[in-house]
Each structure stands twice: as structure tokens, then as C-alpha cells.
Length: 164
Image 1 (cartoon, one colour):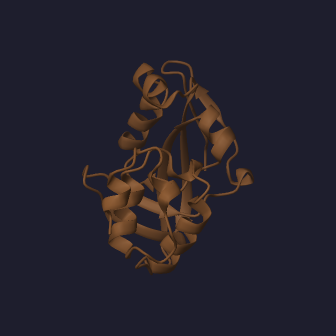
Image 2: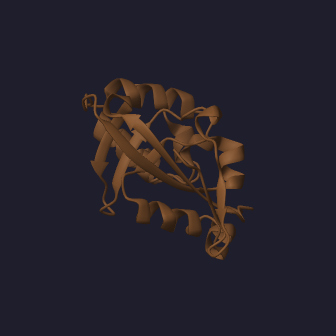
Image 3: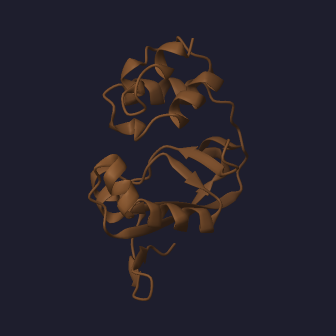
């Protein structure tokens, strides 16, 4: 079932999505094989199906999660769907999205690394797993802008972060 997606460029794969044609594992693969999947016009349909099919129920405990991004991406797309429990990994992503390689590959204009952190309930997690790159990946609905406050800049590494 994934053949038609694999034949498309990674930036266009999500545009081919048709509701209910993939099982959850195939949807996870599709998501992880796309570049900026939330930029697709099919993203809202995909995300609703993903949430409906995801095995979840992680309890009521609080958990601290991190997301490495940039001020520019945060401003354009919000807090995002994919997070991690690994702060160092999130730091790497915040640096990567502002690197020259990312700018060339994705035609990005990101220049200001941002590390978001949030305290959420386990029950707010849609899906959690260790992906094929051995990253602890957490899917959640994007948190509203008002959730993030008290941004501070670390002058040494030019990283902006929020406090919780």
C-alpha cells in the first residue's frame, strides 16, 4: 500500500494521502518519510486519522517534553506535533534547523534556534515510541501559543528557550 507514496518525492508524499487506506504503522512510516508533513494540504485529514488509530493511554503522570525548532518555524507553524523526552536531541534539532544544510535542502529561512519545553500529562500524548533513528519521539496536539512564556536567550549559544 505504501508503493505510491515511496514513488513520490518526500516533500510531496503527504499530498497523496487518502483517508483510511493505511493502517497505523504505515501512517507512522509515511509521516516519518516526509519533509515537513504539516505543510501539506492533506495534513489535517492525516492527523485526525493518525490520532484515531494511535494506540495510546499513557496514564496521568506529568512528563517534561522538548522540541528543537526555530523562532521562524514556531511563528509559522506553532509548537508542532513531534516532541521528545531527550533534551540533548531537541537541542540538536534546534541547531540543525538553523544550519546551512537545512537552508539548502528545505529552502528554509530559519536563523534563530529555539528550544521549547513543556510539562504535559501522559494522557495528552497521542503516541510515543522509539523511531528508526533511535529517537524517543512523542506525538501530541500542538500546544497553544499562550502555553509558552518567559522566553530567555542564552547569549553564549544564541539559543532561545522558554521556562515552565
